[in-house]
Image 1: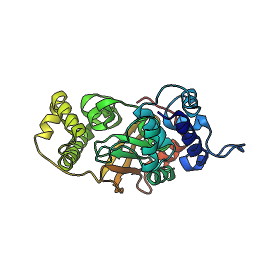
Image 2: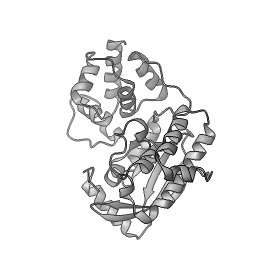
Image 3: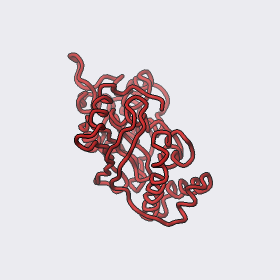
Image 4: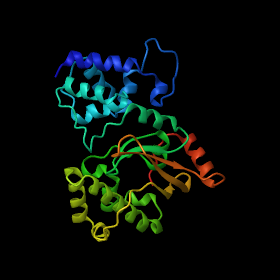
Length: 279
């Protein structure tokens, strides 16, 4: 671990970013260029004190999870991400399927969709980044660990995610998720993470096992979603998966049909901001 080089690299990357680059309000006049330390910590989901210690060359070696969050918060390119890992004493992540680094351009596009819920997810249905509107509509989806990081895993193994959707939509959602996961496994049959996810779901969910044995396969590209929101009620949205430069990452956008109640419901959610609701 090269503490001083790591600290200098983080300071320089932070200085090159403006609040508008990462979807934050500009606020008042800044005495120094770039983001403040607490803003980087907020974007990376860590305490400001912990981030300050890393940037000052103090504290323990950052974990892979911390470095991944910092690379995303600082909008690093793949080369910059790999350099960050090496400075911290870790090997650079593999470039094969399963690399969860979200590129700078894709994150900028996500930030630019300020009026629509949008997120970047892997082909295993792991949410890698989401904008404030997606947070307001669906809740924070990036906080989970282990297999539970996959929305597909949580859909079949617990009631919380299903509680966000009407019961009559559950069968359709289950079929769509299983068919999409089978398409992913077919594309990467030797991926240990994908194989482990499917094995765990077959063991834990009779519903998943039944649907998996149907051998339905279909990459999910568009759909209709009805979301039960505790503040604005039932929101009906179009669900579109937009192609990215990487086959294993997807930009997902929720949009209302013109003239529907969902237009005003999203406007209300924008006013409410990132306040967390409990379904």
